[in-house]
Image (cartoon, rainbow, N blue to C red; front, side):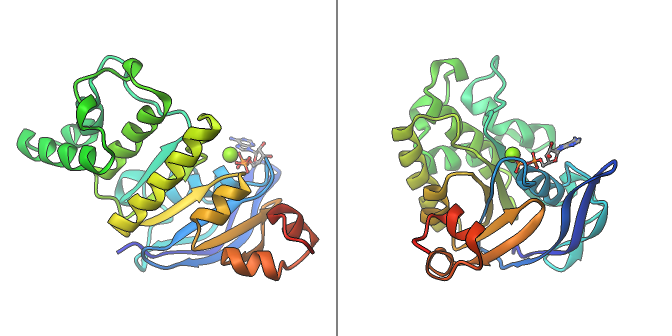
Length: 238
Ligand code: ADP
Ligand code: MG
């Protein structure tokens, strides 16, 4: 399960309102992409859903349960950032298993889950290496692997590919599509890259200064943009 519902959520940083009343229902297994210009509130919104940022007003439901005031660990979600935040002194295997170890899982179970994730991500040959002996793409896979082992209800990605070069981005885009197909887990993904949005998303949410400008499939947004802002952002001919 992994349905997520946002009801009238707002975020204020002091006097500054950054998220301005967002309503959105995400179905279990959907791949949702948030796009919009820099500073429009994408990261803040994702962090609110993940519980890393308090919600000023409104409510967030996961599988029908109100999690608005719950800490991140109790939401069953996992976040993958553009800075991979791997532990440099640990092997790939230990990086991937760390959260399970912290949670007190037995070694045999950790090994099994790490092996499974390594197989999905083609990281088996690198399990004994340190992060510094990996390429950028491999490091990003380890960061994703760390999330997979936790069996999350949903993955939250904040511009996970923006530190990679163009060729690697294309490759990782394909890997993430494959991952979504294999796991069928709900994915919420922030990007400012239109191509990424159009190729990965089941539905795209276009944000404009804290509002939802439009929600729709890539085809809907391309063919019938709600306004000029969406048309310009998606790059449709209108
Ligand atoms: P995006 O990810 O779309 O680029 P952000 O969610 O990072 O946008 O930021 C949205 C707005 O909120 C920006 O104006 C940013 O300066 C502001 N903001 C983000 N975090 C904070 C914070 N901790 N304190 C004050 N303002 C913040
Ligand atoms: Mg951001």
